Length: 335
Image 1 (spheres, rainbow, N blue to C red):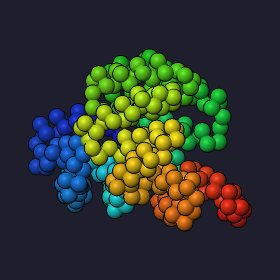
Image 2 (image 1 turned 180 degrees about the vertical axis):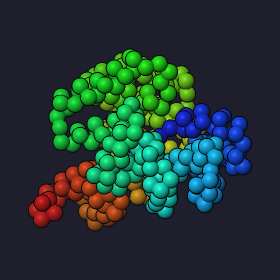
Image 3 (image 1 turned 135 degrees about the horizontal axis):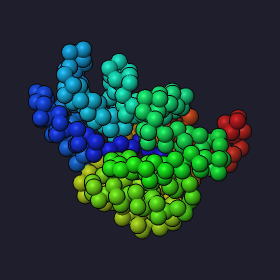
């Protein structure tokens, strides 16, 4: 599964330094990020937008501490834009990063994900390549670029590139928990059944940060890849204990039900995901598949059309559209 993912962990680490420097909105940021982490994201939106607006007006004169607050507020807006499918928040994030943080590898990587979410894969690639130019050891940017190459290159041709992550792990101490996600995911890419390395990386991350949502999702993905839906459900569902608004957890559960042919469970999880983000292309693709499977072509096409509004190039949307076009013998659409 290829979702937008990020982590609160680096934000929490930075806050101690930021708050000790005393910017006026530091405490507001702390509360907003906690609300975001614990499923109260709607409460965080106005606070983060206010911080960003204040920071934008004084961008040229911000102290380093205040600039860090601005950075972390943008990280929060990035997550909320994805969670709720809020295009206005996406635009705020994009414009602020391009104007005020053109050389920040973390934010450029996230901006690449925004472009990827909307199907602009050329711009996504450019953002990730730029992030790697700025920070050659940026794990997420490197992983995202390799994933993009999977569309045109054989898995065997990429194993050496994924091996870089294991080599990095072996030569590096004190790797941040959020970065361990990409090392774990790379292990699985090296060998479909190389799950020991992935488990080690994920467990190390969770030992340091037990509620690190992106890694809990990654562990669920790992169990699903190993055809163990029971354990996959366990890890996806564990996220709801602290964040009932986890879009990635709902999508993971939906994927599990889809793999098992449980269409009622699939539809329930998709309903919940689309309640949060009515525009998510993968959720809309899977919901279209549910209706098309039941031969409700009109409703299925409606969900496909909604998905294409967000991402006209999404592989799942295109594959499902082509599959049912063939069944209806609509060869113009297949082409």
